[in-house]
Amino acid sequence: MTYRLRLRPHISKRGNALLGTSTMEVHMDLEQRVEQLERRSRRYMGVSLVLGISLATLLLSGFAMAPKATDGVMRVKGLIVEDAQGHARILLGAPFPEDAARKRTDARSTAMVFLDEQGHDRLTVGESLPVQRGGQVEKVDHRIAPSVGVMIHDLEGNERGGLNFLSNGRAALTLDYPGRDGIGLMVDDRLDRAEFMLNYSPTVTGPGSAFELFQHGEVTTFSINDKEGDPAKVRTFRFGKEDVPSKK
Image (cartoon, rainbow, N blue to C red; front, top):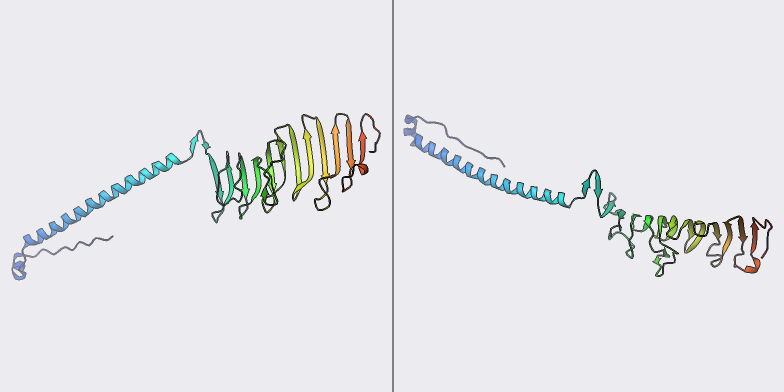
């Protein structure tokens, strides 16, 4: 805002007589204008003070709500990372926070979840979640034990493999077909056994495996199965103490 102060020139008594205006009237007019400006100045100073106090209150409230940092460590309950369009793309927390952009709403865990632009889970790092297959979360979780690791998901958020360590002492690396296991590589601490399994595609057969390789103690066993899983057609070879191939 621009203030304009208009001052009248000093006029001699002779000129005043001609103009009919006295010097005292000019001084009184200037004093009135100065008093008016002073009142305005005090009013704006009061408004500025109120705004300053309000701003300070907001800043202090923001600091109070901000994550606390102690010795350079920031403590937060959860974190949401958004892309340039404002879509949630990474959820991190214990458990990770809820967000309307995420398609799944059934469960959360202590993990970091990466979402695509449509909100599907694409990568999970941390505690595993119930399995989603065919766009649906399984009502009964068929995992043999809780696990922690890295899980990958397809374009619809269905689980397609991962690297995990289970609470029952098993480390596993898996790659899945849509709807079922495809390849499995596992080491079991309790059984002291390592195994590798290669399964037929679900479009070819049922739950049978095409190839299985086990190593337990001094014995190594591998078997080849037909696509129907007929026990009469399974070929099993065992090496170790016996060191002689066997046939079922």
